[in-house]
Amino acid sequence: MKKHTYITAGAFMLLASFLGTACTDGNDWNTDKSYDRLFSVTSANLSITAQSTSAEITWNAIPEAEYYIMEYSTDSLYDDIEMGGTSHSVVLGEDKSIVESPYTITGLQGETKYFFRMKSMSDHKKESRWTYIDDYAFETPGEQIFNSVATADLTESTVRLTWQAEAEVTHIDIYASEEAFEAGESALQTYTITADNMAAGECTISGLEAQTEYWFVIYNGTTKRGEIGATTTPPMPDADIKISLEEGITLIDQTLIDDLAAQAQAAAGSVSDYSLTLGIPGGAVIDVYGVDESGEQTTLAIPEGMSITFFALPGERPTINFPKSLEIGGTHSYIRFEGLTIADNGCQYLINEGNGASIGDFTLTNCMIDNMNRSIVRLQASDAITFDEINIDNCMVTNIGSGGYAVFRVDNAAYTIGAINVTHSTFSNVGHNFIQAGKCALAEVNFNGVTFYNTPNDASRYLVDANGNNTNVNVENTLFGLTPGRGIRTKGTINVINSFKTTDGVFSSQDFDVDVTSPEASSAEVFADPANNDFTLLLKGLNGIGDPRWYE
Image (cartoon, rainbow, N blue to C red; front, top):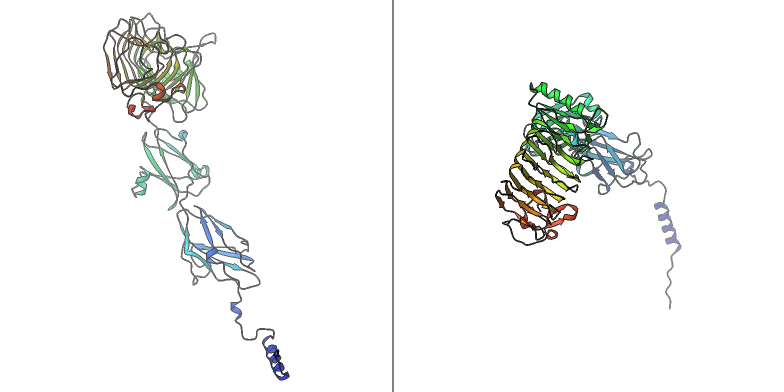
């Protein structure tokens, strides 16, 4: 039997009376209107990504918020501090411009701690309370307004520094090194930045030592705005005058050389013994030749008594083209090339001397020569020619002598040469004798730290042909790769120390013994890619033998 529940009329009236009282409008149980405010941004959803001079603020949108106010300061911020109440406070958003996330604060300083807070705002509802980030503050990383220092910005005594134009900066401190700066050592000097420096965003620090590392720190007052290191270039070789060609010059001709010779004579106070260092701008491509009376190109003659160094200035390796050979007849203490690419632009011989000459040293240092048709030095005069030394150091020479002449052709009894010295260099694909010195009074040949490959590449040619002479040949730390050619022909002594031949680097005649005989390996096993002039050593056991540039 079902049970039924009955509500009496009296009970129903009582319940209705109670419900009516509970649902009256107005919440008349005395709510506090001061609590009717916007929600705050939650700290968990507030994040700051700081850069050196800016910070991106990201937060969660707040319902009913029409805009937001932010405040940052290098002074502490907390609830008891009224908005804008510190001497370093910056308040943002009072113009109602901050309406959505993210927002980026700009104009900050690097390596600086900033306290931060924000709140949501509305014209129709009470503002929220302040929200603070974890730890209350964020820190900007170090600023870097310096641009990288290009090689063209360096000389032996100066460094040109560049930075963002119009940036607020006051001075640059110069230190011996980054470590010296980090250790708190005193600056070597301070450069005060002028208004012109600031407008251009550049200055040149002078009075520096050659080939020396420095550390530069740029400030706005006490605020560091950047730091960078740079090393000055090696010094231009000493001479009575040192002249750097201006950017854009593409020709060294007889008029220029004669004019510079007159300046060097005046500086030396001598017309018979004076010197010039001629700086070739980095990356330049310059022709070298004279012009005869008919306007045709001819050899450029080094003036009598002048010694000269053609010197590569900092930057990409410059190239000097020789449509005609260089004339070095007469007396010169030295003729030198340093840091250059020397190109056969029709000359066939770098030196093709037909006149009497007396040279102290003829030297190529850190030079590159590729596809020179015949010789670096060919002597063809009937008059006496003397060299104290011919030096090749730290050079790479490839594809030379295909025109049927030795790299050094000095085979006449009228010639006297103290020594031909080849050090720390590579010669590959030599089409004729490397040294041809029959009859010449050549005292000695010295190879030290040299890599030879396919030298000579003609079965009838010699590495050194001093036929009939008492030329002493000293071979040290030298590596001989592939060759079908002949070895050393001389009546003098042959001394070999710490040198190696590949199995295909054995000379067909006039061979000589080497003292490093293990491991036995072919050129393909010793060198990385000899066909493409990569002679990097694949066998570490051979490190210390051959041109050091190829050591693994």
